[in-house]
Image 1 (spheres, one colour):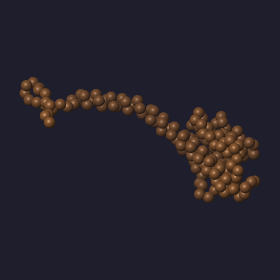
Image 2 (cartoon, helix red, strand yellow):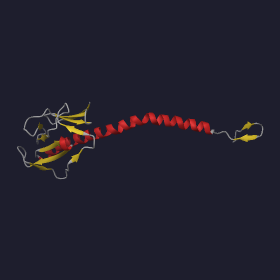
Image 3 (cartoon, one colour):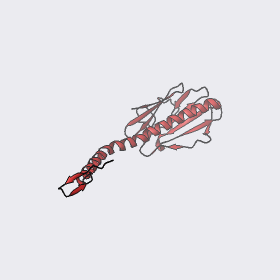
Image 4 (cartoon, one colour):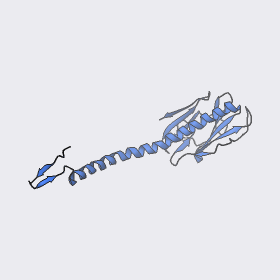
Length: 177
């Protein structure tokens, strides 16, 4: 294979390559493109925490429902917005149960900046108890005993990002707002 060369001033040959100016221009273009991409990468990373928390909460609700059906005992997931935590509790009987923390289930906390609220508007800071019965049905209650609106909200502090809805049939859905 023959190497291509070019003539310079008639004094000899040089190999083809990039000049220092060409390298500097290419590096500047790369820096500009990286600078443009950085804000979208940071937004994506921030939204990852909200998505991950919402999916973990939805997964825990599904797990509690499955455990209630499998073990023929009531199970409850308690959401505590003031401490941004949630946990599964196991009942001691099929209906009208007393609850204790479920074996192997520790309290989970949400990442910093992710807040949990217990209404579709994402404003209530009252605890919510999601009770699953052995037949798979669900009921949301507040500490006062009043029924909830069946929604749990994952917020970024000021605005609702995800909404988790628990239907009376036990179906758990997650939607992004």
